[in-house]
Every structure is written in structure tokens, then in C-alpha cells.
Length: 485
Image (cartoon, rainbow, N blue to C red; front, side, top):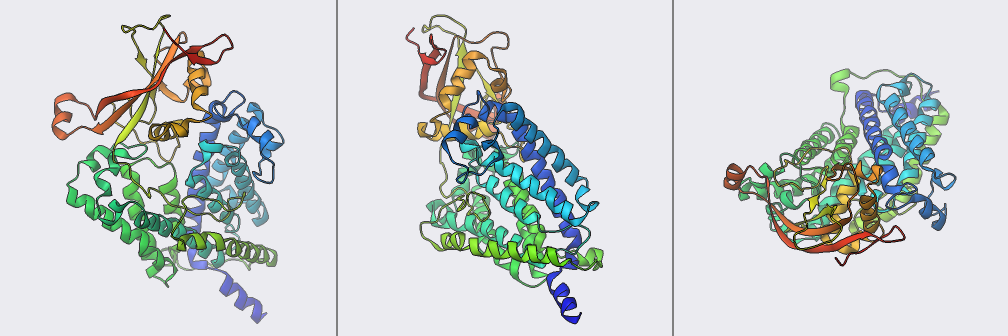
């Protein structure tokens, strides 16, 4: 009996009850956003007539390499139904359903969310090829073993969540320090607020801060990512202070740009280091069931074993960003912006309904929801929602290599006025009939100066660079072909 009491006191972290509650509810909210994103965008991006159809992918890639429920069935109706089911299950956990059911049922609910989202990520190809997808899966897997209101939070799982947060922050800090020299000379933020993938409504103001403040921002980032993460493993209250610093720096990033749920999920992970007992006291819980303790210890052992590869990656001079070492995305590497783009370029899509192309042809522009287009339009805040096509358009402007496999299909869908594809856009200039031709132009964008902003009302100034893709039209087979009008 004494041994069992000792084990329970060692295994349980009763003072973290409130932190667990907030962490789980916030994680359920991120899941909800992720599944909602899938429900709204899957058909156009990965559906049967999508830009990269998942049904073709699952025929080519074996289940063992990309485990997914959609290897069994991959119709638009079934996959969209799974997305809406995931949305509903996330909403149930958000309002506390996991705490009113038995412990085993709560674990099953979290495990089902994880397996469902894994199914989307593993068939999502480049549209799901972002570090925050793996981060959500890794966090979601650990959440299965956090327990519910019936038991105290397991200390092992809390430390595994801190280990995950450490890899996110320290990995991001190392990739910067080892990468672009502007991180070491503190000048990267002379450019980054302007050239980041999807600026937010305050990005113009951040970019216009005095350059000495930009250098302070970079220096503070190095402290937050290279020094503070070690404090997560110190005794309290140091761990809580380290978590608070992480949360504050992530809020700064939230206000300055749109990075899907990356920053929000990082803040959620920081809650694993926050001792809530000064607020709530130390609640009493029922004894931890032996079967639950065994499952937690087994999961912890698995994570420790799988951590070998990410840990080796952190120590490597050829450190890789955002890589999964197993198809279940259980323990991964993270990082972002090892190099910073100095000049912002944007691919602008245009269409015309004229039958023949001449020098006098009138072209009308398609507007995307998030990426810059109309120079007078203030960038919007979309995060934590993920506009997947907008992000890929940013990569396309970096290099045509990023357009392989999907860009031609995008043009084809625009020439057809495909409803699902147009729903991904903010505005189509052809609401009633499809265009006869579409083309892509490359522009250089920069934020306006304060004076230009006052005089023109524009947030951006853009300069034509070159033709990205010449005009195309549907040929006799219904595929986009070069127009020689």
C-alpha cells in the first residue's frame, strides 16, 4: 500500500489540474479549426477533381508509408464527412465532454481525433506539408494520455509536452543561428515583416518600426528560443516563468503575422510548465488506475526511443526543419525561416473573356483571401485558420518548382469557373461565366512608406517584373493550353 501511495504521488502532478484543463480545451479548439479547414478546402485541393487528388495519391503510396483511413475509402462525400465529424468531436471536447465521460472514453475521443487528423495529413501532400501539421499530431498524441477530471495529470506526459515545446523553440532558434547571416547580425527583421508568407493587419506597422527596434526584436528572439527553453525543465517557479516568456513572445508573433496555428499551439504547449496550484490549491484526485499508469509509461518509453533522431538532428550542423521520422508523426523536428527573403514577389492571376488576345485586351484580376493582391487592401488576420492555397502561391513566387503538379490544374479550374475552387478565393472577376483565357504575372511588392500611405491610401506598392505564365485557354480535350492569339 505504501509503495502504491509513493508511486501515485510520484506519477501525479495534482497542482497542474487547471493548466491541463485549459491546455485540453485550447487544443480541442485548434483541432476544431484544423478540421473546419479540411471541411472547407479539401474538395478543391485534394478531392476527386482537386488540384492534387488524394485518390491518385493513395493508389501510388502504400498504407505503411502514409497510414490513413482514406486508403480504404477516398470519395469526396466520405472525406468531407470525416472532416465534419472531426469538427463536431473537437467541439464536444472543447465544451468539456472529455471530463464527463469515463477515463477510457475520454482517451478514446482524443485518440480518434488524432487518427482522423493523421488521415488528412498523410494524404494532404504539399497542402499539408507544414510543420504545424506534425506539431498538432504530436501534441494530439500526447493529449490522449493527459487524462481527464477523474485522475491527476501524469507528470511524465507534462514533461513530454515540455520536451516537445523545447524542440519547437530551440530547434527554431538553432536553424536561425546556423542559417541566414542576418539572424546573427540582427538585421533579419528589416525584411521579414514585409516578406513573410502572409502578413497580418499590423505587419505594415511592424515593418515601419525604427531599425534599432528591429534589432532588439531579433536579439529577444534569440534569448526566447535559445536560452529560455532550458528553463522549462527547472523547478518551479522557474518553469512557469519560462513558459510565460514563451507565451509573450508567441503573442508578439501572432500580432505581426499569420502562421496558422503554429504560435497558438506553441502557447498551448507552454501551459504544461505552468504550476496552477497557487491559484487553485492542490486538488485531490482519485487513485490513478494501474492500466492508465501502464499505458502512460509505455507511451513515454515510445516517445523517448523515437526522440533519438530529432535530438541528433538538433545537434547536427546540417539540421533539417519540419521533418517527420515516422509516418505517424509522433516525434518530429521543427523550425522556420532559416533563411529570410529580402524581396517580396507575388504571382497575380488574371483572366479575360475576350476570344482573341491582343495588345488591347482587358485583363481582370482574381483576388485571394489572404495573400497580397489589391494594393489598397489591408492584410487580414486569418490565423489560426490556414489558407492553404494562399500559402502555396507564396512558395510559387519563390520558384516555379513549387508549382509542379497543381498550378496547371488551378488554371484549368479557373477556366471552368469551378465552384469549389472559386470558393478558395476572395473574388472572381467572372461570377456569371468562365473566362476564355487566364494568365499569371509576377510582381514585386513592398510596403508603402508612411508618406505614400497618406497620399495614396495604399498599403502596398507593386512593380511589374515579368510574365510568370503566358495566357492559356482550354483546348479540345478540356485541358489548359497555350494561347497564341
